Image (cartoon, rainbow, N blue to C red; front, side, top):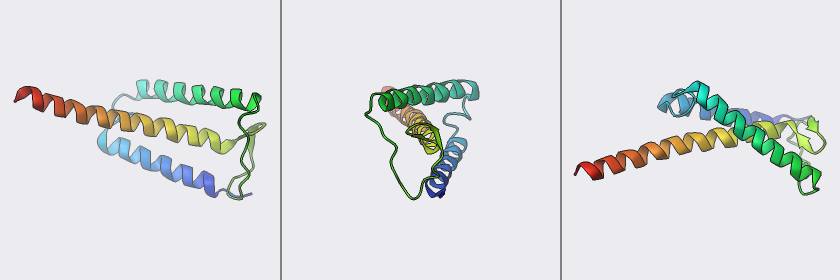
Length: 111
């Protein structure tokens, strides 16, 4: 059993948390709303994955870097951490881009 992929996901998640805290993007802006949005995204994609697995579209990839722990048939534990990273990164990027666009529009309007 190897945990390299899971460790890499945890390092990336730590980076997302650090960026979020430094720039007050998502959780440090409104933790209650961020928890709701992040949880909704993870649940949505888990349902998506389970539907794809049930339809025979998604399969667990074999890799020497994965733990081998499965939450359900064809659903490795790493998938939950990957989906968390995906949703968290998306929200951080969304907030950062929204702020940048807002600043740009405000400068254009005031000129």
